[in-house]
Image (cartoon, rainbow, N blue to C red; front, side):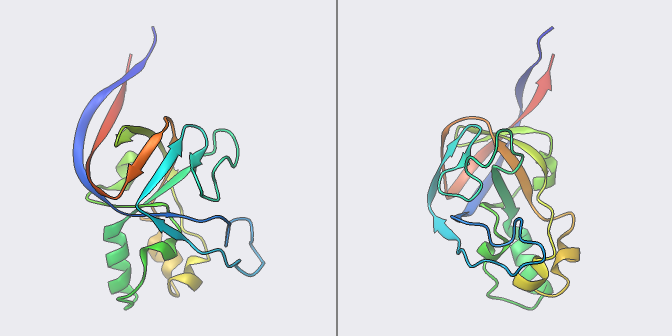
Length: 174
């Protein structure tokens, strides 16, 4: 019997920011200094199935890559500002693509969901690395464990943008 997916629920939430970066500052650079590629904030981004977000460093990285798009909670940005006494800490410093508000991203691990008609599959936590201690604050790597964001595959083509939306969450059925 073939399996498929059906709509499980919808959740109202917001996309606060979208970032892309043309190059890697930290990825693959262990034991080396960070590179200097900036992040660019965009109001909309084109998503391509199996490729990722156009203009981003992981776009077309490799087939089936689990981090074609990364999500990060606005609530975590605000908590980090308080925790590290850094009220101007920018969301882009975390180098995640899509900053969301109003959803627990960990609940999307292993799940399919759509935003503005674009389908994603949450693959795993976007684990913080030792670089967070330098670009956020000392202790940030440990503090961010369990709230480092979500890595996802892009399963369909389309565009997403900043604003308030409904996230459609699916569940597998047989």
